[in-house]
Image (cartoon, rainbow, N blue to C red; front, side, top):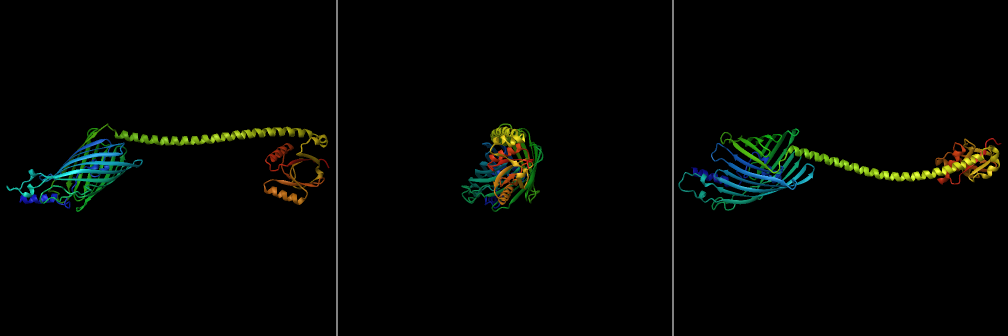
Length: 485
């Protein structure tokens, strides 16, 4: 009877993957995420080693047992992750011995956001532990005695997305689905690895800054021909010193885990699986222990985070300084331009002031010549400039439109007819000038003049400006005697 039982067990363990998941099962995989997805290799800082021991179904003699050693770390400024993984797995009389090497490359998308791409290659040997086989029969069973070691090579691939506390990954362990070679000379040569599909997600939530964190997590995995499995739960951490884990695996078990950091470089963890399926109360619980060792330089995570924040602040301040420098350069350029313009304006102003000063001297001379009526009517008249005319009295003039406020007006044009004079006046008015029309009875000319209030000195200055602007370059001043009839 025992001979029949073990023969059936061998078939179940070595047959196609429709009956069981082929990759080792762990409860504290969040401490070694690259075990399932090579795109997480070197995710943690420094060089990290872990020793794992897992004993399943303690109430069953020779229940499944797993031993593993992992090592991973980051190089090239955390852009590249390298890792290795060796395990030994016992399931009844079946022993699996395997090793994997993994590689990950991290692409920085933007600050605190990275995309990881990972691959892994490994070798696996499956053999029969004949020392555990008890058939109760003195005659050896050929099916057991003819068993041979089986050897195969395979690989895994995965991607990960990391953003602040968020981790999302997709992986395909045993992607090649290789067949076992030289497993048996008889009935067990068709053993083949099955491709698995895994999706995981977690988010690290700081509840109390730099002290207490909650990390909800979930994982979905399935392989061809087997029922899917879903894990979801959460890890609670205090200052990276103590952590608790609660995990539910659909239709399998509830896991409770805890860990503590004993030293800057050493930590231990323990997890217990309590079955919630048909094995509940029959198979017993599952125990898993993990010992973590950190190599390399001592790193204070809190200090590193503070340094990172200071570096970010320095970067922001440097950007602000660069912006201020750029603005200063622009302002300096503008100041240089304004300074050049100011120098030019000052030069123009000096020249204009000189011209005004010369004009004031000329005006003063004219005013002295006009100091008395007699002098204006006789000798001074001959000394007046060509652009100043003294002509008669007020009775000689007939103001058609407008009237000056003093005894002079600024003539900008002269015509023979009143119609022409009015037409020109309207044109100048449209251009924004305030003009008037006066008829010189003695000379029989119509003058169009600008209504500019002020004394004769102001009129002479205005005359200079008009001629300089070339708007009325032939303008002249007409002086008359208001008392002369």
